[in-house]
Structure formats: structure tokens, C-alpha cells
Image (cartoon, rainbow, N blue to C red; front, top):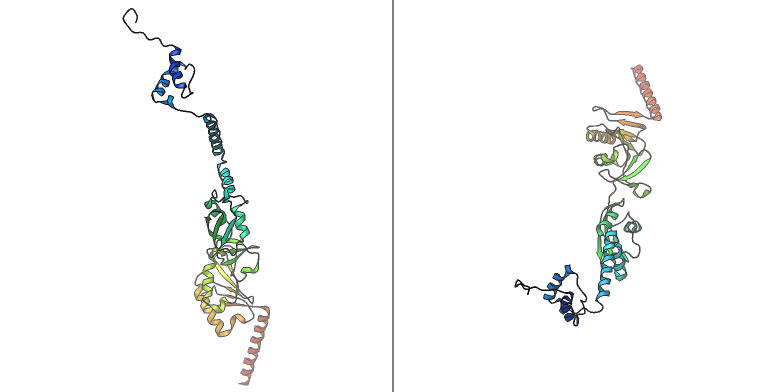
Length: 315
């Protein structure tokens, strides 16, 4: 107590060591003199009972190992190595893909599908991105759509729906298989689809379905068509198996084909020595003869004229 009657406390470092010494016999955690800034938080911790905690001797190495592990995991995450780490760990745990089951593919080989999956023998089923795998398979030329499913622990099931070729499109020197809507599938390189309609010229692939359907309504003509030629991207020529060209009009195709079919049934027009039948005029057919046909026609006309003259003289 000072001369003014006030009570004065003198705080020494030994005073702060007292509680440490008392708790140190049990915890062995705190010792020495605390800096001034930590004295108040230290007293709060003492009141909460932290001094009664028992810290085992291996706590420091354990916490150090945990810190190092957390640092490694964080580094892999930031560096983008986490997926690779997960793939490796799960693959070695028995989840490596060893069985791939593919169904629905006829034009697409199993090898093509496997190459798109990029399996390396240690690809983990756990870390496999099925959406990315499906997109890779669906990008193959013949594939319309694909489904990829995981079958644990080590299998993948892939179901493929393939495109349907409708025609062979010739543009210049190139031959392509196309769908009914004209979308390209793949180059035509074998005779496997040689029985498909051959459409020729600019714009022919997108218009082929309509003309093939119209001609199919007249089987006697359709069975003889070798190619459908798009002219000026406006109308069609039909080239028959005997070399005859049928020139269809821009409008009224159905009427022109019906008239031609009736004429052919009545006179066998398409089996004669002709080069082309022009149906672009509404009221008539214009027939172009071959050179041999022209000779025969000329000879027939002369013979007919002779007969008419001879008959006139007799009368």
C-alpha cells in the first residue's frame, strides 16, 4: 500500500512462472517467461483448463507429418495433379480398367473405340470421366450416339448407335457416303455399300432423298437408274443402265415420270437406240437418237416414202 492508501501490485516474471510450474508437473507443456503480449491470452487458456491436457510425446512428429501431407495435397490440387494421383492410387487398389464391352457397332471397329478411350492398362475406373469418354466415342465418323457406363470394379460398357447411309455422293472426283438429310459420313472406299443410289453434282446430297422417293413410285424406271445427276442445282437428269439420259423438268416431275412410264410400256421407248429423252417441255417428249438409231430411222422413213410413192403410182 502506498502513502495515498492505494494498493499496488507488483508483477514479476516469477509470478507468471508459478502457474506454469504448477501445471508443468502434469502437462510439461509450458515453461519459461511469456512475452507481455501473450500473458493475457495465457491466463484465459489456464481458466479453460488447458493446463490439464496431456500431450503425448509423438504429437509433434504427428502434427508435422499432417502438415506435410496437407501441403502435398494442396500442391497437387493447385498444380492440377490431383486427378492423376487419384487415378494411380485407385488403380493400384484394384480398380484399373481391364474389361471393355462394346455393342451396337457394325461399321466402327472395336480398335477405333478403344483408341478414343486412351486406356493405358492402369486407367482407374473411379477417376474415369464417362461424359468425356462418351463424347470421344461419339466423335467417330460412323457413330450417331454413344452411351458409356461404369461396371465396378474394373469394366466399362459402351453402347453405340451408328449412322445409316442413304446414298453415295459424287462431287468432282470424290465419293462420300451421306445420310438421308445429306450429312456426310465417311469417304466411299469399298464396294460394301455399292448398291446405294449414286447422286452426282453440287447440292445433290441434300436433295437426293426427295428425287429417289419420286422415282421409286415408278419401279420400271427406278430399277434401271444408275445415277441421279443434279443439273445447275435446279433439276435432275436420270442416267439409265443402257446409257439413256432422262432430262426431268424443274416442276411437274411426277407428271413427266408417269407419262414416260406409260409411253415406255406402250412402245418400249427406253429400249430403243436413243441417247436421251427430254421432258422439260410440258406438252411433248423430245427424243434424241443415237447415230445408229438415226441411220435406222432415216432408212425406215425412206422405205416408207418408197412404199407411199409406189402405192400412188398403182392408183
